Image (cartoon, rainbow, N blue to C red):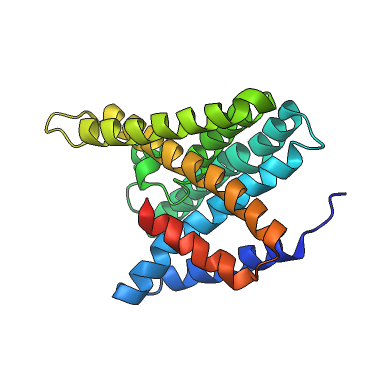
Length: 215
């Protein structure tokens, strides 16, 4: 059984509260909270994976991520289809199964849209951070620069007038995966720094906000 890290659990708890607050309104405050809560989760996720690499193989981490991320994504998607189907049957309304399936495949409009990009970002993170120490820093730097370039390119592709549905979905996935990967790498750097310098948990929250504003 893995040992719990209290300060990480505290950050997760704060992020969960921010998730709720971020969906409570549309004022400047609630919008700010909405854009902050997810980066906190991703930053912590990157730090946790970097710790797991010290005592777990990449295959073990990937298998665990498939169980917790991919399995959850499709399970909740299918549960939603079933519940919507039951609702339509009770109310005797039309059930558009094609639209429901497209919500699962087309992650942009899915409530769990962040899970596929998180999984892809985790894979990239594992590949890059598993390099030898003498090439690791260069690999991280080049991968972050590549992700920034891809984010810009794919956002432009998706915004063109004749973009197809499939193109929009794939560009959305790639752009978000790149953004998540950058947050994961920043999470490793900042969390290690905070631990070494014994900063308070509030410094970490402030750092998360600053990183998000910069990106």
